[in-house]
Image (cartoon, rainbow, N blue to C red; front, side, top):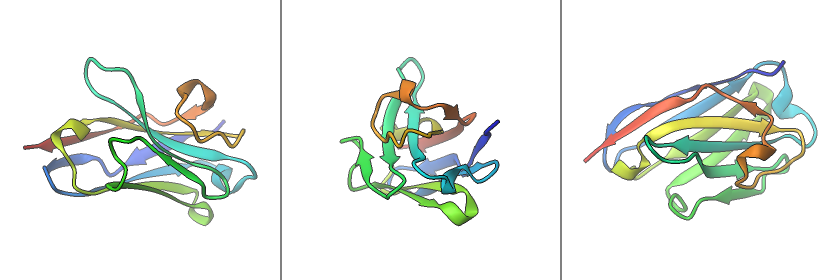
Length: 125
């Protein structure tokens, strides 16, 4: 069983930065063809893809976060990161990390097999 645990959420003012971490049990992130992703869900809204990364380092970003957010992974530490800069109030949401063994790093959440419990990010104006 794979467990993903997010951390690093919190409250910041607009323009600030946060770095989210997602630690995995076992060595899933160093496994061949495991892609990772970050999603978020704001109150009353559907879960949306934020960023994804393939096992080889290819990335996808939602248009709303391009140039501000960066996804990265440290396979040796079994950890995935989401660096968030120039935060805006509309970035407020619960952020989830996800992983799948199919090397899919797109936006469809049903393609991800493993999910964390989420971490709250609140950006005030």
